Length: 390
Image (cartoon, rainbow, N blue to C red):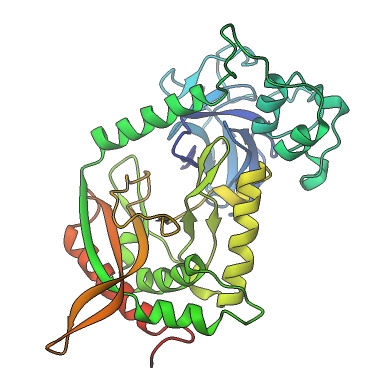
């Protein structure tokens, strides 16, 4: 059996509710086929089948599953099934929820109750509750007419009520608490090793200057994505996941998660196949992902499957910061601003653009030496960016 587990899609994510099964229990599925729709704290997410075979549902619709909890299993096609009663999902994997069905064997076909009300993202529903907005009256602009945060805000139907004392209500308290809990858990459960260095950024600066008047409109972040994706291809042990059973899976491609600050917290949409894209393609897709993350229209395809994370604070007077690995990924890369530094150049004192890069690694999956090799590979790739030095 191949397990289908809930992976962590954002640093604040602790669980998700099974909204709708797209495939029935006992039905065949193909590898990569969307099989279930989940509602997280920030988005509606589709999970794909990890392998081909027959789907056996474990978590029924309405159940709330914690990160790494078991959603279903896929039995290889052609394997004779042995009749057996499946145990109910454990309380460690499925939490109680008002909409959850009564516990019991889940081998039988799971009922699919009709969904009521408009299709809306979880973030849009939360903002609608806070602003006393009737979702049925809001016209959705998201995929398939889905109501997203910008639609609720634009409706202008109400304001956030102020508590006693006259101060505005803080709507992100619960999210902030979730972020703190997850960061605390990461520090407690993941043995971090940080490898940092100040890299030569002259190639990065020259490439950005060369592209300033082009139609691409590439930013420093776009160039970093291209360079980092190529560097990760040279250090594959940092591009993948550490599974719950302790095994390490290296990803075949670089799907780079990008930390994006949003009104409701940090999201990490995934720029897929980053190493195989042109700079123009990277730039277009990054802009789309950032906009989707900030307006609440990002869906599961935008958020799932990241193999490594980039957090760039170069737009601020930040030189160095220590990132926290977001499991099950193995590594996270933090980059600061590009600034001119006084350095030794061929025995002389010179001024060159430099940039601090810090790699956080799950020490259970890789050693610090891999971080050193990634810094070296990244510096090489920065020097050969389009428009950079030969």
